[in-house]
Amino acid sequence: MAIEISPRIKIKASVWTIVTAAVFLILLIGFTVAYFYFAFSIKKISQELEEKNIAINPLEKAITEKEAELEPISQKIDDFNKLLAGHKKTLDIFTFLERICLPAVWFSDFDFDSNARKVNLSAQANSFATIEQQLNILKQEPALISSNITEISIGEEGNINFTLSLIFR
Image (tube, rainbow, N blue to C red; front, side, top):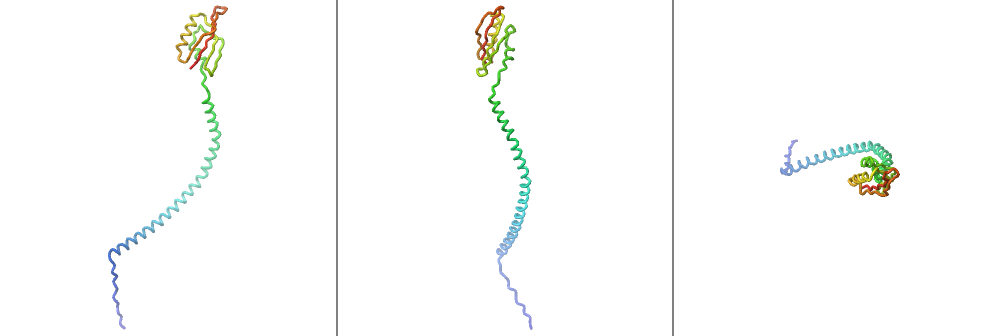
């Protein structure tokens, strides 16, 4: 028996076919590796996200409790702001009078209307010249809108009694 060797059949493939097949094979391997890499990364990130969500839940509960605790305080602050906004600043009348009044003028009665910003004062002075000087001082005062003297009379001891009306800005 004789052994015959059959000749090998040569596959004729063009270079472009081989290059295309090699590129396709490389791309297939690359996409497969990328798929598994991204699948693993997504799984890992999902686990981290879940762990962080679990860690955040107690914090959210604590924040909710603190907000519930602070709500009444916030309401009190808002109420106080409304009260403070509605509060009218009173005039510092006594300091004002002390600053502008002459030593020879003294007051015996005081009436204050905060809505009209008006003060009525019963006063005494030792002379008409003192009253005139006091009026000149009051007319120069920028805090006053007007100043009027009414009910002038001479007292038993020679002092001049009068009523002074002041209207503030």
